[in-house]
Length: 388
Ligand SMILES: Cc1cc2nc3c(=O)[nH]c(=O)nc-3n(C[C@H](O)[C@H](O)[C@H](O)COP(=O)(O)O)c2cc1C
Image (cartoon, rainbow, N blue to C red; front, top):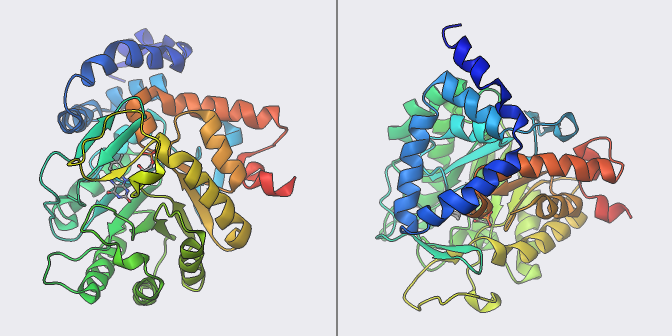
């Protein structure tokens, strides 16, 4: 191989523990990145990420640095083979450009989007606001993306480079403009989904009904409209599993009404949950000016999302696979969601605050937690709290 001497020189990289990279991120890189606005940093990371993933050698090197797969973490979920349960949640890789990088970082799956078929400008900048002490981001992007028609070739090009890591595509269910009705949004989401399936662009589809930032209401979190949406999607001939991204709801009755509807349709799982919309429910440790709009991610989402996962598993665990998302920064957080009923775990904010090395660290420590508690594999631990 052309670069074999270089490979040899870096052969020891795997032996340097992933914690070392985390410390380097926290003490060196993060203080510099956090001097700039989160919007600037996000753009920078996307552009640097595209360069970093562009050669076989750089992807190999990053994999050696960051990926920490363990046999105990492997599982089959709805027909997909996953090397580990930790995935990138929707919203970081909005235009699905970084799938190979996410594989190198160590994720077991990655969710791209949320996307629409046509380009969507989203809300005026800034889209993000940082709450460092609260360990949270305020997100107000409004489902901005370049449009699936524009980005499809890039997705296909990256498919091989991402190796066997499953790609989920998050489809936004949203009206294109104020003149459009909810029926138009349903047809648009259906066409977007068809477009993905006809070109085999994804291993799974996530239907995002819960963006808190695209207009004031979330119409498809009304059970009747959700029923209409899923009824229309049921008509699609599909070879991949479908998930619904749930809102981070305070009312259990409302949450249950949505799960009841979902369980009647051809949907294989739910992603629990999206950003926190209601700020009154959050104990903030930073100043948050009134004029900063958007939903909150990170630590403020953690407890509620785990409670919702626990509830969903108890009532619908036999029918729906659960992806647990919200405030995962450590292996303990991920393990808590798995024991509550999540088969897979998604994250964004934990990676932004603790660096990309945290993904491998979570996997490594998660394997240790499973072994400590006597599980033979990750599947045995899913919903373990309910079996005590
Ligand atoms: C920067 C950012 C952008 C997001 N954009 C989306 C999105 O487009 N679609 C979506 O379903 N969720 C979106 N989310 C929500 C996340 O997928 C996730 O549900 C939430 O942030 C909780 O996970 P975390 O605490 O690990 O960030 C976004 C979150 C962040 C932080």
